[in-house]
Image (cartoon, rainbow, N blue to C red; front, top):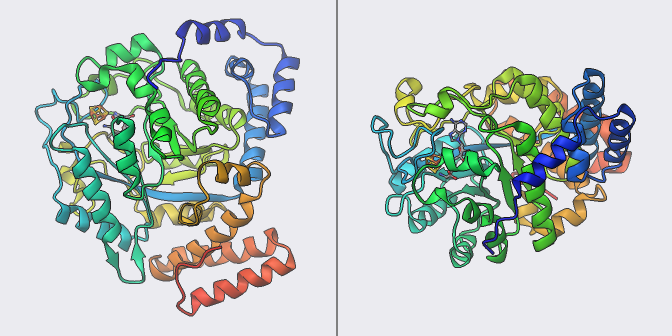
Length: 465
Ligand code: SAM
Ligand code: SF4
């Protein structure tokens, strides 16, 4: 599959027809979304064109309700692992771009990768997102696959291990996706960056990434290659955010139509300043915090069952606000320079992809989110038990996945508190676990959860249902 299915004029028309919508129409659409039915592009365009603050508040309120109904109060935690920053592309927004001659170029050796993973495991991480630049020899598929195997093989004290590696690599052929799948990856993630053709062309002046359609159809090929958890995303700030949200939705619907299953996740990165990257230093369509919160809420209403990922590009304050609106996965303690987890950060910008908005340690992030009532989850049970793709969606849609996710989140959080947390985080975390068990579960379930929590207290690890 290599056929472009994004028609710019259609998206522009949807937005033009929805300008200044009737209040009654907006309320009707919100009521439909509240039933967790998702929205059509036409309905989503109406919400995007809503500028009335009172209505935007109702949209946000509904997003909070949907997030609570489907995902509860948990937030899945992961760390990105950059293994190489050599790149044949020239994306105008990225510090890794080929023409950035001042960037220190690095392709980590397998030993260096293992050392990075050791640091991450000792911080308590169980999930990674592995990524690199696009380079035919220095970050080839063979190199990447060896890096995955290396990372999975690293074991540290307290049963420290990486249990799920999601990957973000340049688009592949179906046969290559089949090979990649064999390494036991979780989700295949790739951002279209912008769904607007003219902007895409300007932002990607040279290199293999120039080909819009090849990138757009990567998720179709991944599914054809047997990878049934795929994650899409747009880089907000390159073009009008309203257009990008409709692009994401069109992509999700096309996947559902052609492959029988939509994306597992949607990522919502916003442009950050980057070393020698002109479009990142002066974003062509900056997205304000107000609009960012609005777009997160609208995505939550439009595709309620798709996880939403927020990275450390955003500041702690913005992250706190958008967690409530529908984000289900977050990175913590990230470095965007290969080798960055073992280095002190003062020289990091010389090899980094972009600057970070949230530079706190994982423990600080975890303490903060627990204080705000979110359960950090390190759970990888669905993936390990084969609850992926369609099987996952069949459980997610009637709300059954909650039963597994909420309990497994508690068990993995408890393990984190026992093995990796600072005393202050542990105190807050224990209180939150007790309160969640008390408030959210019926007596029989409560008893079985408390027994398992006790077994973790006594030294048992990797407890999940
Ligand atoms: N090189 C591969 C690619 O481009 O798909 C792998 C992923 S790249 C290392 C990760 C992502 O970082 C890109 O898809 C892009 O959306 C994002 N990114 C690049 N520059 C950025 C910036 N200045 N601010 C925020 N995100 C950026
Ligand atoms: Fe290379 Fe990816 Fe950066 Fe583009 S976004 S320059 S492809 S690393």
